[in-house]
Image (cartoon, rainbow, N blue to C red; front, side, top):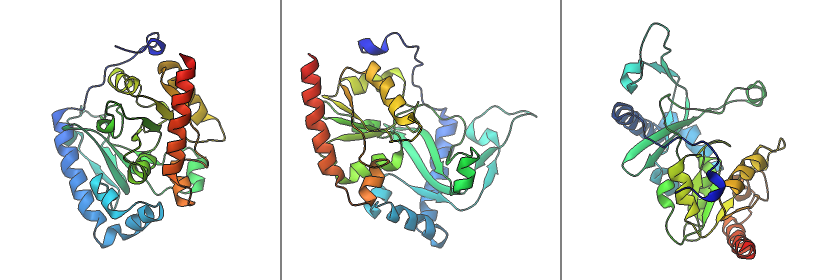
Length: 258
């Protein structure tokens, strides 16, 4: 059952992509994982190391690399075809699969875009169509364990690496992602949920956090000390200490509401 704060909002149920999509996506992502460890993936691997991620973290999450832009037939992904249907674009970039349970729910590709491209509105992340609106690392949510809810997968991986015993880090993948009944119910059962969305100059992170504050009675806004969780880690701020302080603050705040 949805928490009271979420009942007045229209939700879609969360269903995984088709079996064809999942099987082809898993095979493609596995090939990309092999590329990351080869010469063509050296710069991408150096980028991940520069973000403070260790090799065991990278490998545990199946991170890969697509070395060049390719376009695939939609039928390979189990998608509708036709004269107006566009081929599936798989751009060059770092490949991040979203595995939940036995299913592959989504694949995100982190493209090497420039500041000018971002200003022009080009997205940093692209994924093959047909993916589902999911919650990255959702399997980590367990009874009795605080949750750290972030926007990006690299932020979640950072917290998994630095404080796996303290929090269950999960990511929405976008400011409006993860708003599906199964994920909301999982989060509502946690002792507390730290809403650690990015500190954006346009307020997008605060707006996303405001939505979850309405949906979850056990949530509090816990801003990163820099732009996001990974930026803190890269600059030498202890994510573990910050998360521990957030848990103490959240539990005190939630108890005060009762």
